[in-house]
Length: 244
Image (cartoon, rainbow, N blue to C red; front, side, top):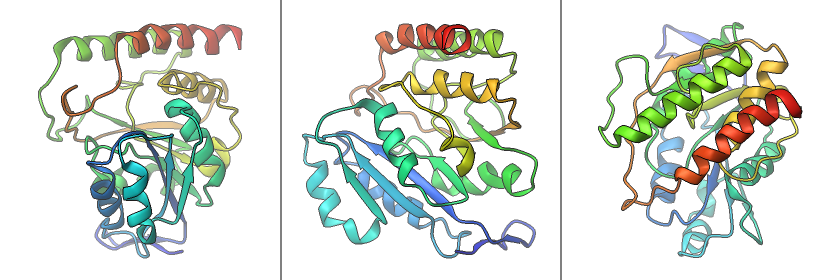
């Protein structure tokens, strides 16, 4: 597959991109996000799309069957394993040179893939984080305490890993495939973020951050992460840095 970046200064390279979408009860947005990934016009042909349905019960599976012709691979979990479990399944199925994590809601914009993968394509990075807290991208204004919590978790993670990330909890992470497939992911839910950060830090990989936009959603819109996940994140930061 040819990944073309003609709109970015004429840069072109022969590399394959895989997009892994963990999905749980997202019947209202899953088709829109798949269409958005397919519409990333700077990629010719479009990226490989892998959707892992984590035992949805709201009609998401029926939507996926209807739009299966738009998706390269759909994996259905027989039980709910959480975001980390769904990503573990999706990463194992990826065949691209670069693997991107994409949530199944509409909080993150796939049109920003080019800036996310550019440091890898330039040979500078092994892993790239898309930061919601740097750069000039548009951001929906939502929960103050979520912002404080994200900042504290990122700070604690940085203290343990000696990295200087601004957004450890971001969904948008891009990896060279051999990197992500070499890591044994153990966390089932949102503990994936601090776990993967600790493990790539231990590997002394080249990590970059790029600023991204963010259209956060409310709990009424279907946001799932809660305060219990924050405490689990603290546990994971300490566990995977010092005890794993």
